[in-house]
Length: 298
Length: 277
Ligand SMILES: Nc1ncnc2c1ncn2[C@@H]1O[C@H](COP(=O)(O)OP(=O)(O)OP(=O)(O)O)[C@@H](O)[C@H]1O
Ligand SMILES: [Mg+2]
Ligand SMILES: [Zn+2]
Ligand SMILES: [Zn+2]
Image (cartoon, rainbow over all chains, first blue to last red; front, side, top):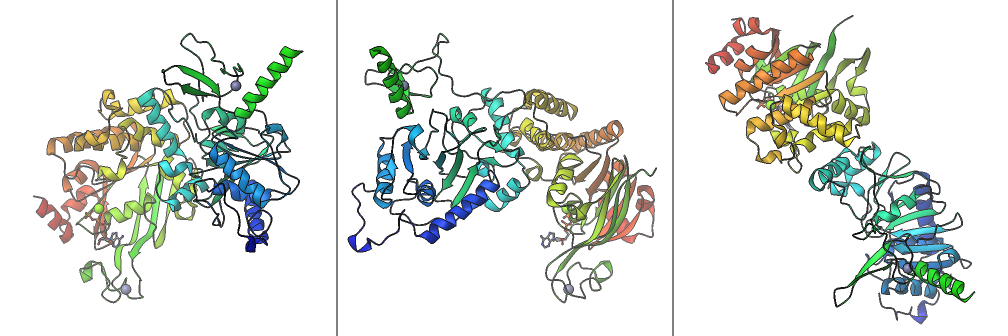
């Protein structure tokens, strides 16, 4: 989207949150249904937004339908608040929702819209996490027909997905799915948890915060309600593993900026070919750095 | 206690609009299964039989007589337009067509097995031979990878497909080998009832003989009841104790296979016998 976009003056009568009240109410009704049936892909009437679908319009419509003047919003893209996409989305909300505060600090936000990551800092019951989803259906890799996928979900028939995992282990000795790891909620529906890394999947399990997932193009909303059982699809004898950040000596790699050895790291390669690592959650990294410098001064 | 495993009554399948004259204007005496009034196809009508534990029942008849339609309905591949089937399993009677979709799927995956003439229908050629068997084990809620591997390997070994081929794609296998993988897959959950639809049609004679031997061995070892569909009298003679003869969607004769094949009363069967000679 164009960051300099301004609504025409003659349209100054547009509603708070860009969408009209009726549209927002409809989205909220779908959200309630999604919460009532964890993992069920609730269809909703995705609206045209003044930006291309695929730029997070699914997430944005959830955010705009939920946000009130007393909310504090944080927007993340690829773990960062400063990426172009995050900045654009945040500016759009500021433009259309007068009074809403924005923040980069996870713990200050009441509403967090994100793509690719769940913040490192544990979320609370007071927070809602909105994840932007490109492909909502975990079964799409094994079944092209949506009608048949609906029946499979209804019957909790995920054997073909498990066969895919079986074939993966046969070929590569491990499950190679890196993002969008199929995750089962409350022992029934399997969801595509959006392009978060495996690292973030266990953090959906028993999350105190409500997690809402929105796919604008596919017109689907689904939810991981607070304190839901969320289990990655695995075999009994092959444990689910998150990304391994150990070096050749088995030593946990630390963030080059804050030194954290417990966060999800991005790998950076400079022009000379040197590999370094840095926290993917930039706001977490900055706070860690601040804590360290405060400790030094004391 | 009765040893009955399956009881089929009035099983029918009509494709098309249907009119009140469909039944009275089709069948062997009209020499057609197409209703002249509405054009509907009476693929099968009023099929009745009982099957007992460990028994092999043959269904024979010319092309288009309704053999595949009959087993497809029993395997829930197709919905009947009328009739009932009762499956006796573990002391419980299941009214098969009264079950909901999920119950039918579970019965089909866990208690039945199907081997099709065309391996494309029975096997997924996107995945390995072992993966095909794993799928059925996973459907019956086995979630232990190593156990799945062991069981799949054992099943392939039992059907004389070497374990070394387990991780290969069955697309590259010979026709006979593909049928063996289908049989291994069908047997994965040790079902008490198997459906075999023209499993040896189109294979070399020596390969046919080996597959038929395997089927007989399985029946002896596991006591699996089977319904064997074929238009090959040799297959019926070798495998089936009792046989149904179908023509234009109707069962026109049934009884002990030897009697059916020898009975001069059955002109149609005699023609099938003659044409096979
Ligand atoms: N989906 C369908 N729509 C219309 N007619 C059908 C359909 N499926 C099957 N039929 C017809 O029903 C009749 C019975 O078919 P079926 O496949 O049961 O025969 P069959 O005895 O197995 O024959 P074959 O020996 O050739 O396999 C045939 O006339 C067939 O053309
Ligand atoms: Mg047939
Ligand atoms: Zn850091
Ligand atoms: Zn008719």
